[in-house]
Amino acid sequence: MDYIDNIELITRLVKSGFFGIVGIFFIGLAIWIKKKEDRWNFKNIGIGLLAGGVALLLIGVSMAVDSLQDGGVIAIDRNDPVWLIMDAIKMLACVLIFVIAGYIMRSKRIKENDMIDMEIVGKIIGYDTVTGRTNIPGYAHPTVGYIDPYSGEPDSYVVNQDINRKKNPIGSEYKLLYSREERKAFEKKSNKVYREMEVCFFGLAVLIVIAGIVKLIMNVL
Picture 1 (cartoon, rainbow, N blue to C red):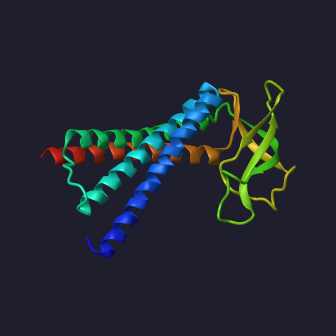
Picture 2: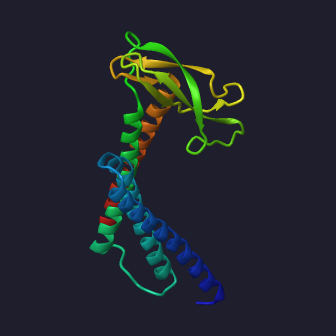
Picture 3: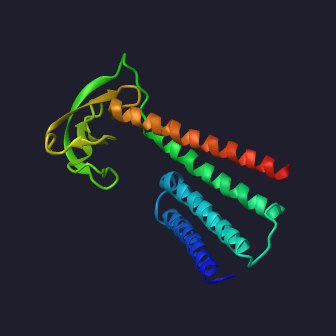
């Protein structure tokens, strides 16, 4: 290989190494969450991180092998059962990520019933500027505090859409809907966003499965 080929090979190996390092970090973070957090949080966060870490690690290894093979450093038959199994595990890990994300969105979505749902008025008690950060200055996801009409206990709801912080300062009123069936507050627009994200994540999982099956058939034929 000449100098340019060497530089290109090193660049591709650095990229694959980055995927591998991020994957190992996610796996370590998932293990840490399992040790520190309770079981529910691990199921919703840790398993997703673990699956993502495994997928990224396998992607990094696969990219490194392709780079070394294209560079003439090694010669490997990618149709070997070992590599086919690795590709299958990589695909399943990616599918698991999107399935978990879809279930998380489903858990956030409240079942609507226009016949019995009621309207309540809460107050904005803060703004989520971390997970709700957008490219539009002055906009963020508000956290609305309210009194549960059944228990009388204070509760809060994070609205999954951006609103103008100047027009809706902390302490201003914000209308929500309340599900008598689930005893939880929600907002129609946020509920719609969760539903769309749920469909999107499950749809991506199905597309990955279809793509994996097509690739497997092509390799066999």
